[in-house]
Length: 360
Image (cartoon, rainbow, N blue to C red):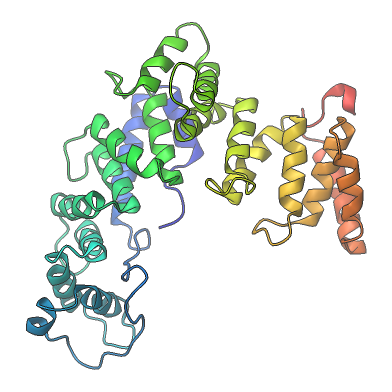
């Protein structure tokens, strides 16, 4: 599972405090666990002979006393039909024996089987119990899934405080969906009574500022450590709350946090998303940084046409080095790319606010 669960529409709806949207999101989180393609069975991290042929069923008596990691990997092969006949019953038995030996991936895989009803009758309570065992061993995805189950009432009684607890553990390791989950809960005012200093502070700020501005200011406080220890994760969550409501400065800060120039938080695709929100609303530095991100050699988002266009907008707004950077790209671009960039600039100028009036 790599794609975020949340849709932007859900975040915005929750920020408006609509009860029906909250119920719909809870239902969607539950349905997410039921989707066969949403959760991926995992082989042992860094080990196991992945893809090794197995021509017969495992000897459970031998394996139960032996290599739990190998047994888990055999289970994954039986789920996928990789070098063996697909057999969910055998896979379940492999996972169960390995999980009883505290094998983390097997515990996670059992959670998937119970959550999706593959090879066993669907049972959210049992799925949650196995995810919890993996989460307690520090598994990030299991921690996130527990958060979604607590939030939506799948396998647990709906409990937002518990959801926050598990989301925080995963968010601290820069797991984007967990940060989105925290943003959703805080923004909707569901962490009541507030169980973090940040949530309490946000409610205070929101009494004197619009919610988006309050969330932005709290993100700044978290980032700088004003009145609290500096916390980049908390800053990311609150800037996400503000940016999801269209706060331009928050969107830029969030993009910068995930930019590939920061090793610990490097998420180029996430940086791209938030830079674009700020850049299309005329934020000059976002336009420049977006152009740099698009032009970075080896980047997964490299696109010289987009890079040229955004650097040109930044140059028009007087951003230092933007013109020099833009012109240097011409040496790397083909003629069709250069003409495509000119057409793109003309099209983008139709976006209201992409350039302040004085820069046009």
